[in-house]
Amino acid sequence: MKSAEFEYFRPSSVDEVCTYLANGDSDAEWKVLAGGQTLVPLMAMRLARPTHLIDINRIDALHGVEIAADRVVIGAATRQRVLERTPGLADALPLFAKALPHVGHFQTRNRGTIGGSIAHADSSAEIPLVALLLDGAVTLHRKGASRIVPIRDLFLGPMETVIEPEEIMVSVEVPIWRGAAGSKIGVGFHEMAPRKGDFAIASAAAQIELDANGVCIRAAIGVGGCGPTPLRLHDAEALLIGQTPTDANITTAIQTIDAKIDPDSTLQASADYRRRVCPELTRRAITDAVTDAQSKSPS
Amino acid sequence: MSTMNITITVNGRDRRADAAPRMTLIDFLRDELRLTGSHIGCEHGVCGACTVLLDGDPIRACLMFAVQADGLSVTTVEGLEDETGALSAVQDAFWETHALQCGYCTPGMLMAAQALLHENDDPSDAEIREAISGNLCRCTGYQQIVDAIKLAAKTLSTERANA
Image (cartoon, rainbow over all chains, first blue to last red; front, side, top):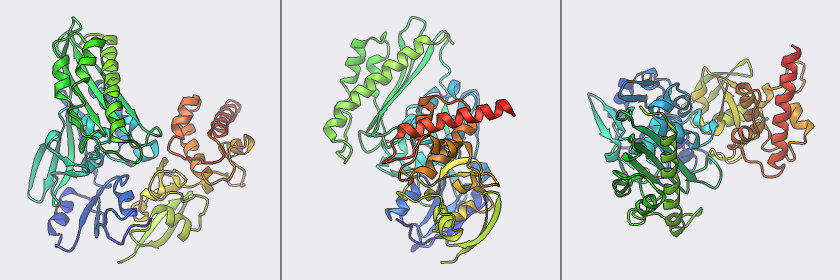
């Protein structure tokens, strides 16, 4: 359980990182090290074996949370714990505020980063799921160029993204739901794990907007751990929008889930079990989101 | 592969040594500095036995390379006692309530408890269980550990009241 040998670099700017990544020769595997809460275990188990590691933890430009009028911009190396404690997060991104306490344990949130969690694209991880549901996007830099990739186009499969070896994620942008006049927004998040903070067997998240009459006018619903990537459930959303959410129409909405998910069997749970758990967790997440919205004062 | 010369402030003292990049912080503390109070359990971030404070925040020392801590400050379980060697309130409470049996998870539990009480001087049972949720115990039983942290909170609040 020791990492293979590697060369270590600790640059102080994103430009230096891009230069290193661009100059990597074909025999070398250069890898960015952020919080290390996913990469270091992978290295210890020799599932990852980078020859050159670029530690980005001390690059100031990659840290920080900026809450603007319509979006939150999060530096890729911002610690999960820092975002969790950012004043105003619960108002701006209530679904993040709800999901972050489920991310690992507080010892791992003190090191783990927002960008790192998204870059590793674990289907059962909370941050990729909520970033997907809120229509987030990441900014990727490479030497001399940069591009913005919506989260919905980022994940290719388990632990696999469209991020190229020469690229580094510098920030994550998440739009804020401001809500129509008189509407209310609520969130729900549920997951099942063998121990609180462990990898989720399955998870579900929902953010719902109700108008002044209690009719659902906007919904973002999705699940983790039930397919190769986190999954947004557009069919379930469509069945709720335009309706006053009741137990009956939430039940109708979650009946669409089974056809959309593609869970694997693992040591912790079989695929069949995940198929049973996933709709129920989604029901709870939606129900919580509706109750949460109803308890708010109108915007 | 080259080694790097690094300086880490450990329990208030600057410690300088050579480390290969792949050496984890926990191996550095135990093997280079001979601070064997922090334990190695799973070596991949699951058990919490290696928990130390990095600039005051609890982290897993098996998930960080020693070279990454160059210039930073680390507190280990050896840093909990005072200069006379007297146990800290948290350590004393673990002793008092029999919150350790084999002792393997204890250094991690102590550091997690220390970090919790630093932020929250009157934690509820639920908050205590949340704070130690990242630390596995396989023999003592969590109940005595929860009792110990409650007792430590009480001792510390009495000390503050009398100060």
